[in-house]
Image 1 (cartoon, chains in turn blue, cyan):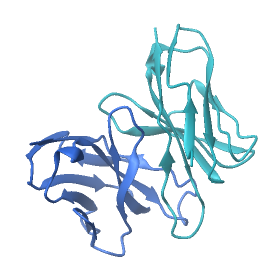
Image 2: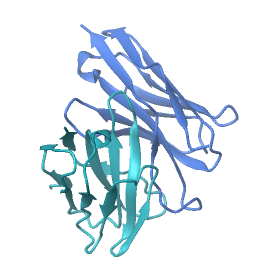
Image 3: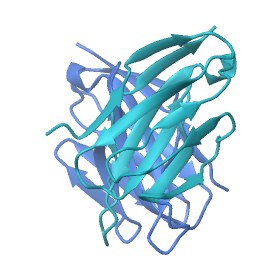
Image 4: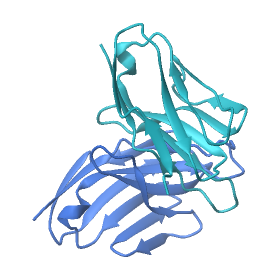
Length: 116
Length: 114
């Protein structure tokens, strides 16, 4: 019940195109859904996050779409740029009323390559 | 603004050796975590701490130990290293407050056990 399933494993997009990464979760206690961006040799860094009380959140070229009934959420990167080439992880954690440890359960990651 | 720092960056261990991975944060965060990242996989939680003197196991704690004597430091100890512990280790921290969830990650320690 702790799994977060992420797809695709890898993605190649042309510059200016839209990148879409999907995640699905099982644990209904999850209350916080972030996306992390990781460049080679670096630690993950928070990109954007959403709570289940909204269906969409947009920050610049990055948008999270959230479907609570389907237990799915996705990251859309508009006007993808070569600098966006990185590995993207979705994650989920319970809110304060959950286990209390607030640890993230990560998806397996998507390696995005944006070709110039 | 150092954030979360980890040492060493790289280490090669022989089977059966022991070592301690260091993690320090300067943001006065009460929550700290250790994750491992295997190739092509997401991060898995090893241990976590909700404050000084309090630690608990995550998903994959076997072969590891932790301690949290101060708010700033959260070292991870590997006893009797095994090839299965070859991985990249990330330390993270976060602050407990309503509506605040972000975890801040260190740069990682790449460990090879041969």
